[in-house]
Amino acid sequence: MADRADNKLIGKNYTPPDHIAKVTGKAKWAEDFRADGMLFCKLLLSPMPHARVRKIDLRAALAMPGVKAILTADDLPKLEGAGAERALTNEPLYQGEPVLAVAAVDELTAAEAIERIDIDWEPLPAFPKKMRQTWATLAASKYKTRSSKHKTLYTTPQQPENPAKWPPDPYDKPFVSLIL
Image (tube, helix red, strand yellow):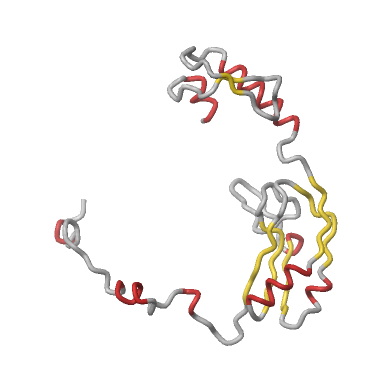
């Protein structure tokens, strides 16, 4: 354990040295700093919960003055292995997942370039039928042995033929194994 002399501030009032600057708005944040030649990046986010990019037309955006580069998932190396997380994707799995990045001389130009990009989307099911069936089977098998103190019947919109009792007892072992 650390020596008590190292813990000078525990149990004492502490006034941060920059609190007056923060309260008055004079504090400098990362957003406040600019450098010569600095570029600004804006991301184009998926408007759909699950889709595939069929085609991207970048010509109008690249023709704009001030747009320096556009980065897509095809420009990035493929990541493999456990925990590999993609920065950009051609098949977003959730609404708001980054699809491409635009680098421009200022934020306004980058935002306008995003608006000029034409993407042909192929909508995919957000919650595929196979997943719904797996979830319903798993939920039905887990809820058979649960306690009977909850009498409310809940039916999901996706699975009207598979009602499940709700709310589940958080201490019910089958439910705990379901969420773990």
